[in-house]
Length: 226
Image 1 (cartoon, rainbow, N blue to C red):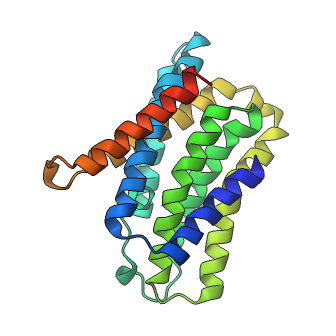
Image 2 (cartoon, rainbow, N blue to C red):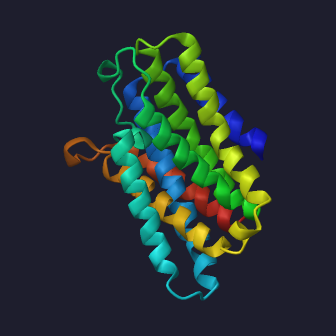
């Protein structure tokens, strides 16, 4: 699991470095990942937390949405493609680093409490386009290569770190349903933000529509037929 999470970032960085996809192609990656993330959340993760019949579980989902709103304010929307290297200069983007690292760390916590294939794949597929965006962002910035390598390495390790720490903390295991609900709120915010922003000027885009349908379809097949 740890290796798969790290490899998702490595794959994204490699795609950015060796293929250098255009912005429109990256947007298609994002649309697909957003659709997959939303589908897994609605079809798989939400039913699981509500099966617990725990009171006020919806509050933790809303809290997750609030947490992600704050994180996106700090990262200026990097989770769904809103980063601009020309605003950076040669300074380390600490707010971007902290927000993305905390976001990645929180994603890993439920995986450490209980193995969840649906959530694991949702995180992996979401991380690939984010890693592509970050790699392109740093490629166009004035930051030195060691700083870029350090930032991307730490980002790749944050989700496994969250999972590893949660695995041995009994206090977190006692609040498994609440933590899952919190992460569901984060997923809902990110996926809907990606999908709502997937079309420029609200115009119909056939390629992005197909990417979204493919994301929905794969999530459905993985949830019910595998």
